[in-house]
Figure (cartoon, rainbow, N blue to C red):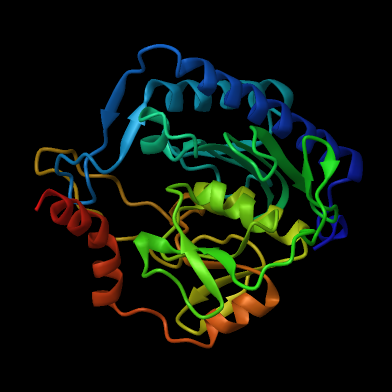
Amino acid sequence: MTSAATNLDAPDISAIEALAIELAREAGELARAALQRQVTVEYKPDARGKDSTNDPVSEVDRAVEALVRQRVAERFPSHAVIGEEVDTHPDAAAEVVWVIDPIDGTANFINGFPLFAVSIGVLHHGLPIAAAIWCAATHLLGPGVYHAHAGAPLHLDGVEVPRERATVVRRALAAAPGGAPGGTREWEHRVTGSIAIEAALVAAGVFTSATFWSPRIWDIAAGALLVQAAGREVWVRSGRGWQPFERFTPPERLPRQHARADAPAEPPRVPGLRDWRQAVLIGTAEATTLIRERRAPGVFTRLLGSLRPILRRFGARG
């Protein structure tokens, strides 16, 4: 993927990347500072509109998204924004869209577990052109911003990240969804609780691969570009099986919504980028080939994976 794939000038893309880096770093420092005080936490209802503790949102999530929206509007007033916490749908005619996950790994963040991130990706007609992910922990064992723009290599805080790690190991690590069984012959599995962290660590060569079965666009918009900038692969799954990722496009139809009985009915609308949702596979060419050639997990296997952490907790009480 090169900058020639867009009709934006290189200086424009560099300016966009610079602002993304600045905002990611500022938001990350805001999150770190917030951990020194009490943070207000609420919980979003589940897909059926019922009370749930599975999807927390903190005051910091909302503050970070507000910060990014304000600064983007000031610097690039013609650009649109998609953020996890504010349910807006950009005009279909918007050429440039910023996609924000203000705190990816909110459950980790509010519990003080140091694996969370601020993810900012920028799309031009759906094509990722710039990305910055502030990570509470990086492959250099400290916080930092992984960043890239279309056609350029991966950087961490302005320093290019080598495509290959110096240490050679006989069994690598891979990120797996939902606490999948311990690993394969080729690698051991790890779960961080943050898609953005896992994507950044795939890009940095810590993980050989990562699979996400139902991410939202804000989960992966930045990470997809970082992975490609590092010379690794991004695949998406559709009815035709795994396909090389090219760009984000709206789905053909809106996903089924489960609303509370007392909630007002939403007016009909055309699907947009905010509605994008597909399985994503990222990693080295060797790892993605191995995973694509295996069968996708069935509904039961995926359900078991999501229940495994709960079963472990019950087992620990026995």
